[in-house]
Length: 91
Figure 1 (cartoon, rainbow, N blue to C red):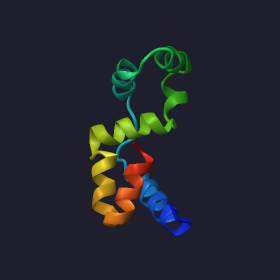
Figure 2 (tube, rainbow, N blue to C red):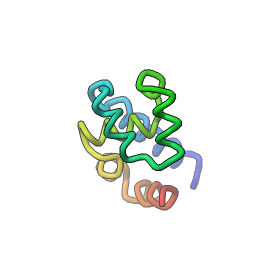
Figure 3 (spheres, helix red, strand yellow):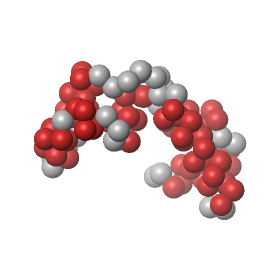
Figure 4 (cartoon, helix red, strand yellow):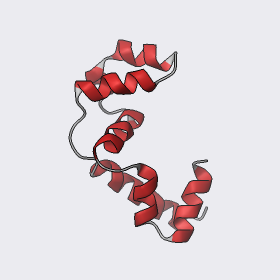
């Protein structure tokens, strides 16, 4: 992947997380924990809700619950070639 393509993709991904909607709620955290496998579930249960608010995986979960999925957002906001490169890197 070329550097300028990487930067375009990174910018769109950052935009996705910035527009992600409302702040995470305790109910989101509980749902997210139920979807995690051990040992991750145990780790984040111990870390707690407040400490987990900034975790990218958790933020993505909240965004997908409230807005739209990352994959669809990227498809809509990237060129076809950038989207295909992003898919290749994330498969």
